[in-house]
Amino acid sequence: MTLTADIALTLGTLDLRVDIEVAPGELLALLGPNGAGKSTVLRCLAGLAPLREGSVVIDGEVVDDPAADVFVEPEHRQVGVVFQNYLLFDHMSVLENVAFGLRARRTPRADARRIAYDWLDRVGLAEYAGQRPRVLSGGQAQRAALARALATNPRLLLLDEPLAALDAGTRGAVRRDLRQHLATFDGMRVLVTHDPVDAYALADRVAILDAGRLVQVGTFAEVTAHPRSRYVADLVGVNLVSGVVADGALMTPGGATVVIADALPGPAFAVIRPTSITIDRHSPVGSSVRNTWPGVVADVDRLGDRVRVGIDGALPLTAEITVAALESLALRPGDNVVAAVKATDIECYPA
Amino acid sequence: MTRARPRGRRVGLPVPVLVLACVAIVFFALPLVGLLWRTPWADAWTYLADDDVLTALRLSLVCSLWATALSLVFGVPLAWLLARVEFAGRGIVRALCTLSMVLPPVVGGVALFAALGRRGLVGEYLDRWFGITLPFTTAGVVVAQTFVAMPFLVITVESALRQLDTRFDDASRTLGATRWYTFRRVTLPAIRPALVAGAVLSWARALGEFGATITFAGNFPGTTQTMPLAVYLSLETNTDEAIVLALVLITISFAVLIGLRDHWFGRPDRLQGTATA
Image (cartoon, one colour):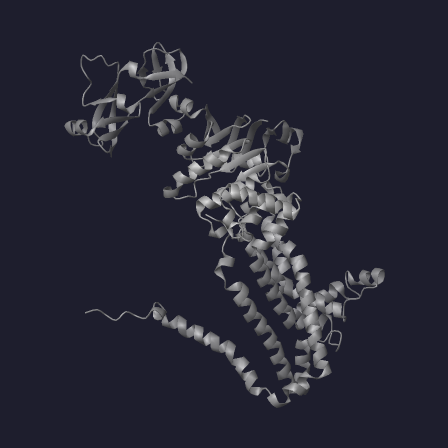
């Protein structure tokens, strides 16, 4: 009862190469910026987009493998999908929507309607059984779509941005609901989202997808503790520096040197927290600080009583200082400054 | 001082547009009024009860309904092909299949004759091998009407299919529906307004068909003389009868258009996409 997918596909400008594995009962979130290829991965798993290379294996059954000339049509994959915007059929009642998959699989009408009604009851929509989907609110439509997908008893459940269509006010409550309903389904689940909160709240593991490549896979805590992509670093709000470690320092491709406390030689990432960075007008003299980088103030962003200062230079950084510090330094965009960080404040790990 | 608020209904109506639109309405209404004015109401029933007229009327209805049915059976798959399948020369195929809309119907009739006539490209073999003769038969009337009427259905349905979100088909497939089941249970119901509109348009076109019919099927009372042909014929002998017959045709078409417009065309909730956001 596992899903393994080794996906290679080119679609327009998107070159997708993704290798994912989902364990029985696990919920994997595919998280990444818009256009990263997340939804395309789902389409590959569901059989709506054939692979160019690689394979998709569900419960030991190969459902797509171009090299072996195997392609199982979507209707025979037993994969349930909750689509973005839910895509309920508006020419049928809510009950007929949920019964649709069963009817398509030749379940007798009475049985299909009974099972569909049970599902509607389970997601709290029994009273809407005879209504058209257009009367449902966003959250209700999402539950109806979930019931419709689960009524066919899928081996794998795919959810494409299930919360993106909702307004901010209801999203929290719907997310809690969704977590509860997802917990009752013990099969494999893959969730696509661009919202880290969804991934954090719903997923067992997170796979970060950026520009068609998987950059990081792990639990949410693991992924955010050691960012390996600009996307995750921005998510967590830290500066990510990649380079090669040699002689106790990390050299960046941009030509900057980052002195670090201890690290193994070789390609590595360094994380510099914005709060660890101090900003001076001039290089500190007689200081214990090992790292000083000259730069130019690019932008100044006030966030409450703190200020985020973007600094351009050989090593672009974001520093976080207090409003008082900003005022005493009188910083403006275009000013020359020196950013300084203690070597012991920098976390470094192999790439 | 506050100016009087303009009344809601009058807001934003540009006068020249309004005037031109009214001229257009008068242009369409005037012939109808003229016809009503000239109608010999006293003798109307006598003309209508005439056996030849009733035969022509029945033939018109039967043939136009057959033509509509054939347009649906072949036109919907054609529309689907043109809307959903990308193939080389699609534009040429579309032009070919809608050519009869812009062709003078008489030209269409001549072309049908060349293809399906007893000496025609295919007609010769239809006659020799299967004993099927189309020209100058009731079946020939249906063929001629279908030829000019089907494009109206095809373009209406094709445009609806293009506007339909194909992800509904995807959703159906992942729920276990085959392509054929999806087509019947998801695609067709979703474009039902366009299907009805297209069928009505092609039916109206078939009912009024004259040129292709008289060229390909001739003008034989009882087998190929439909109402438009009867109107034209009686115009040469008895103008009053022609006017009564014309009025019958207009009444039927007008009633159908009005009845269906309220039911199918004007309801915005039926025409909108079905995405639930």
